[in-house]
Each structure stands twice: as structure tokens, then as C-alpha cells.
Image (cartoon, rainbow, N blue to C red; front, side, top):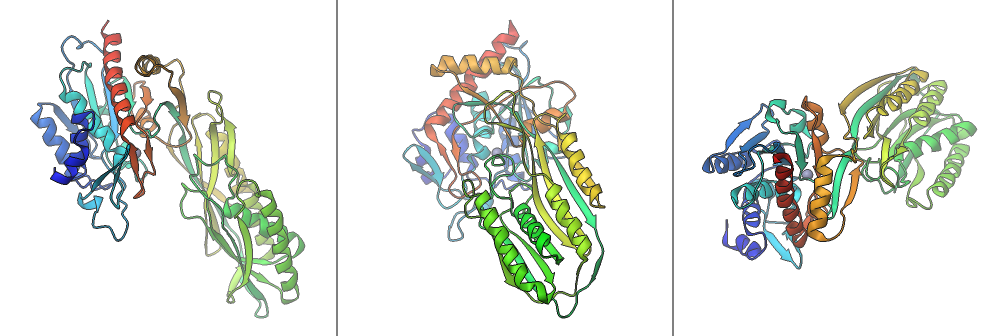
Length: 494
Ligand SMILES: [Zn+2]
């Protein structure tokens, strides 16, 4: 601990928690490179005489015996991830990837100077360590499960050896909204529609244009899927289809989207057009643009289509192939497909076309489909498969992990609600997220049923140098955690 850093957290409650949190700011823990953090928790566990196990994926579990009188309670797994996103302003002297995070207290918020803070998910690791160090806080047998590489597609959880987890209750400490108990999340499946269609040389006198979709808001492909934001690949496909209906042309390429996890903000197509149709082509694209802008005027008013001259292309798909490919883009669904039966305004099932790529004669459309209802996703995949086959292509499917379907009768939830109300005098908001959480992956891995709950303090702008955590909500998070492990060990022990 450096003097400056520790002075920032000095006086903050709970003291032990903040000391552990502060220590983590001096330890490099980028995803896939967590060794210094793993050594740190290993050493700490050794000092306290706790058993440590690690799997080949480098996930760590620390086994903590029950406090006196709670030995017969069910084993509770406390879970969080060791890694953090290491972003920094280019000019900053600080660098989380080198273990240099400079804490700044700004009113009720703790942030970092010029870098990510690592409250996501340092609060989980610090809370686990502080909790079990204090022998005055009763708990049953605990398994402190610290995963790695969460921020790069839940890699650590995906590689989890189920032998690490024997507990029947799992408390995930990687939620970022104060006052909420999360009891569900979406599973996900990746698909690739691959359509190979014939190409021929272009005529020398043909004109070449780029048609570009851009200016939309984008956003998370799960959390933001029901906000009516324009998907650049979809609106580009629509503009081209509407244009083609008036002015047939040949598609040279169509590419867009940067990540399966984001709603595409940019997409571009290259088109080869007969010289006597060039003016009509431009006009038709502009017409399509005005219809599309109108469609999104209330939800994404920056989204637009533009057309520009481009260098000549050597070859292109045939007119017939172009029509087929544009039909396929129309058929690949994107957006919410079903709402949660348990919670208002929550999407249960969705699919998002995330990336389009042209390689030779093949157009590939990569989607990420999500649901907390595992039985809903096969129908979405069947739709994508039908789109692929109708266009003469095929579908590749990769099931990532199942969803965590809300169980409103969960004993862990009942205990969480009871303790929350007792502490704070009002009920918590019980909810689920339309995104992935490690708990879903973990429960998929272990053979026994896990009763699960997730919560955390208020963390804003995670993964960016603006990341900050609300100090008063950390104290609330801490009180809830302490009281919940106590409650769960009393219930089980009786
Ligand atoms: Zn996290």
C-alpha cells in the first residue's frame, strides 16, 4: 500500500474491505494475465490456513470452514472475477495493467485517475477476503470462487472444473446496481449464416458506388436490444433491397459490425451499376434513406444511409445472386423476440445480427441470440437455419451456455429479500438481466442444482477510465453480504 493510495480510503467503512480493495489496486490483473492477483490471494489464503484449489483454467477456490456452531449449514459459494478491464487515457501516468491505479475520492464516489478502477470486480474479491477474516461474522462453510478472464467472454468460467464447486447456493458479486437482487440472466448461442453465390467479372463501363449505413447509437446487443436502435447491417440491407426493386444492380461486397456483442453502427456495401441506371440508383438509395430515417426518427435519429462513387471492382455477384443475398439479410431477424413472464420491460429472448463479412463469393452473417429460457433458443436457431437454407447457404451453430431462468421461489432469494428489508426498511428490486453472467455458465458446468443470487454496489461506466463506485452503496452491499451469509447458515443449521 502506498501512502497516497491508502490515505484516500482511510476512514472509509468497512475498513478491512477498503484495505483489501486498496491492495488490489497495486496488483496487475488484466484478463488472461492474472498471475500476480492469483499469487496474492494464494498467499493470503495460506496466511489464514485456508485450503486452496485451482483448475487448469486457473480459476481459484478458497475453502473456508464454518464459524463455530454453523458447521452443518449448507456450503455457500461466493463468486467474483479476479481480472479487470485495463483501460487508460493515453496521457495518464497510471496503468492498471502494470498495477498502477491511483484512487481518487470525489464526494461519494471512488474513481481512478486516468484509468479503469477495477471495482468490476475488485469489490467481490475484497469483500470475500474481508468477510472471512473477521471471526465475529458468522457463516457456514464457504467456497470463495475467484474466476479469471471474465472480461474476455467468460473464458475462466467456461473452463471451470466442476470439482471446484461443491456448494449448493451461489452468490455472484458482479452486479452493478445498488438496491437490486438479480435472479436471472440470458444464455447465448452464436450462429453464422454462410451463403456462397456465383460471381462474375464486372463490365468495364459499369459504375461503382459505396452505400454506407452509419450514425446510429449502437449499444449492447442484449441490454439495448429493445430500444429500437438501428442495426447498420439491417438498414443497409433494407436500403439495398428497396433500391434493387427499382434499379437492379450487382453487389460487390457487404461488410459491417465490429463485434457480435454490439449493435452494428457502421456497414458498407460496394455495388456495380449499369451506366444508364447510375442516376436512378443514386435516387433510389436516397429515397430508401428517407424512409429508413423516418422509421427510426423516434429511437435513433442519427442513423442514415449515404451513397458515394467508388473505385471500380473486378468482379461482383450476379444480379440473381445479389437478390438472394439481400433476401437473406431481410430474413435474418434482429431485435427482441419475447418478453419476460416474470419482470416488466425485461426481454427474455432476442437475437442480434452483429457482423456481416464478404470473403470471395461467400457472405457471412454472424448473429448472437440470447434467452434466459433455454427452450426458446432452438426456435430462433431454426429460423436462422431456414434463412440460410432458403438462400442456398448453411448455418454454423455454437451454443455458448444456457440461461439462468428466474426462480421466484428460490430459498436464497427469500433469504436475500428478508435480510434486505430488515437492514434497509424497504424491499429490494428483484430483477434479471438480458446479458450473460458467470453464474449461468457455472451452474451449467456443475452437476448439482445451484440456488443463485447476484448483487453488488453501484458501479458506473465500467470498462472505461470513468469507472466509479459509490462508497455508501459499498457499505450497503457489505452489510447485505454479511447478513445474508449469516442468515443462510442459520436457516441451514436449524
Ligand atoms: Zn465484472
